[in-house]
Length: 381
Image (cartoon, rainbow, N blue to C red; front, side):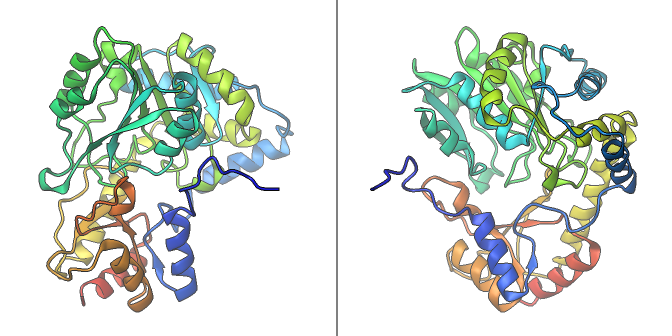
């Protein structure tokens, strides 16, 4: 018996590959995007509290009421945008599920989807598994990965169904601006094009930048699915709890997909997060925390031959190594993991044609000692 793969060109993700390589060689893992420090003790206490209170059975399909309500309130407080907690907020098992469900909700066979690359590796497979056709807009380091909306507009056809955004951006650390929203709104006005916006790094934004989510523009708000997550914000990536914000009609279709993926999400953690979110400083302080981590990492590689523009958001810093070697980025990432004990991600893997601009991505969501040792090793190159 022979199985015909639906994804014949998909192998093990680069994150798994580099993390395994780091483990095999005892390297510092600055590749995969997870912290190596603990979350708030208060959050752990809250999980225990709700475990012991017996909140251990299925949550509702849309998520528990208190968590949906506090997310809606938080969004209103921060951006002045209202979502009905019963009809327009859905709790899911991580942002990757939210992205898949949102894409599935709108993309049908033959639909075209605009992907701004480099992009996170789950986007393209989700599009293709739903019969969609990826249409790429390539961003480059020459202009710090800024979006040329004229290029985006030129890619729009009568088959375009969806534009997928990510701000703050992984892997580049860039953020969208108010002007970006204005230009995007002009492109999609009077069309049936939807927006899926990956905003898992919403609260990890630096240097006084604002988070310009498409929901802050009325033309974009009505056609946008926001995919968020608590894993990055609260240093709990292993909990896999996320959410989707979308107008009622979009949320109805989103939930139809969500019910067949996970149906519901871990119950006691939802209650813990709902209570933890009642104190805004628990998420508003995250920006400064990670800006200090970014600055620490940059200070630690200040004496190196790398070149960089400080990340404006996310917990990744990209560096250019063209002054050091002509090696392709994958080969260099593997060699540095084996020889000096520092693992990174080669940015070429985020392009569909593996464009090599001599850029490595380092995760600075690490304790200071790890960043100092990594910086010392990298500075010797």
